Image 1 (cartoon, rainbow, N blue to C red):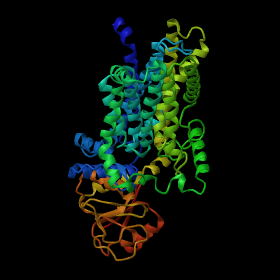
Image 2 (image 1 turned 90 degrees about the vertical axis):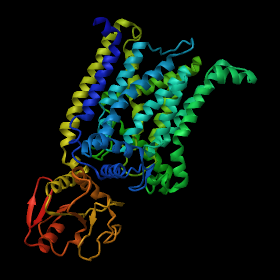
Image 3 (image 1 turned 90 degrees about the horizontal axis):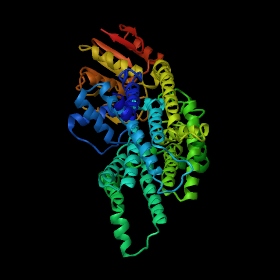
Image 4 (image 1 turned 180 degrees about the vertical axis):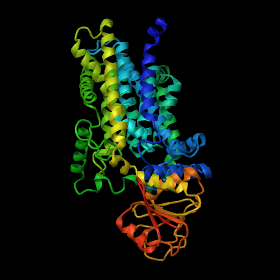
Length: 580
């Protein structure tokens, strides 16, 4: 047993980190966050239609447009678990857990590549245990990050971005280091799949081209080959660079169906950025620089104020992680400088990748003007931020033990310190996320808790005619045939300019999605339910319940006046008006 622990302690610690990550992502998954935001519910409803019809779309154009891969995965989750809140949330929690593994592998592979110094004397030399410590800490910081935990528990497709980024980095550097065929295939598939995830990932597609370009320039400068006929045979064939190029062939082939779709439907390519780009401003450069500054400081000082994305205005990183991130950036600059001085191109490639990736993945957030700073659009920063934090810990170790950091006898203490840091972070984050953030009224409002409770209440009323009063504005989107809109209603004018016309049974605002999804977890074919606007109340009803999305005094008085015989039910999150 002792020999086994000595030989496999790294994997045992990694399992320990993954176990924490699983707990933070799956514990009470259906209850926290305490609701379903309409954008989540729209994904959920589209996945139901995908499951029922078998029509798997590359792109779902409604609600400003969404790439289809995540909706397909939700549909497959329904097949596994049935249509439920848990099935909606399961894919994100699973992808969040896999990202922990991806971050560990990416950090380890990048440092292995950087340490392969071809005989050069690095100023900062990493031992194997140092590499493992950095990899385990990077994955541990991500596993316990409020930022990543929160988006792992929400049904947004953006959670695929850090997952595919981390594995894309891992397979790309494994391809460069080993020059083997299958890593290049997996790298190409991973980068290509990113095109099917979230708009922000498109910036990441520059990363593999940048990595290979810098690595090949370093190869040329290192080997100084003669450019002649034998160059192709030696460099491209014998030294395996054709396998690196194979990554791009596979990548483009993977992207081809979506590229074809956008070629035929160019208006959908940037549909989500319409109206919220800095280029729509009078002074776009000034707007961009302000946004960039807001997202840089978001990591350290004032974060996203949206309760759905964050504990409002909390910085993106806890103080110890933020400090290590800064030391990691300093470490990286020193390594780049040392790499040029000693002509260690591997180290240069790795650290330029980290710095370039950090700058590229902040662009989707900095180029938008809505909700600044915006933790969701900046989700692609995560792998780079937490890899930097792991490197920062190693640099701090070197500063504390300037002459002993390479000695085996100091590493039990160093590694024990790293584990204590992770345990302290986990204790704080558990309370902060589940006990504090998860119980906030602002969070319940942000996730449309009332709409969830209306759906649950409707599911308990089998015989009564149910009316959902939609007095929240929103983007009109298509609904399935099971939804009835404005049946036997008055013929008054709708109060909202962008609301669908009376009698259109296929359009409703996005705000109605949450109640619709909760109803469909009970029965996909909704029974005895009509979705109406406040000024479309039926002339006469018998055994009916009315539930407004927003229980304002205006709509309450409207119901009281229209049906004076009704009874009010003031429940914990919702207001119901019952007419016998």
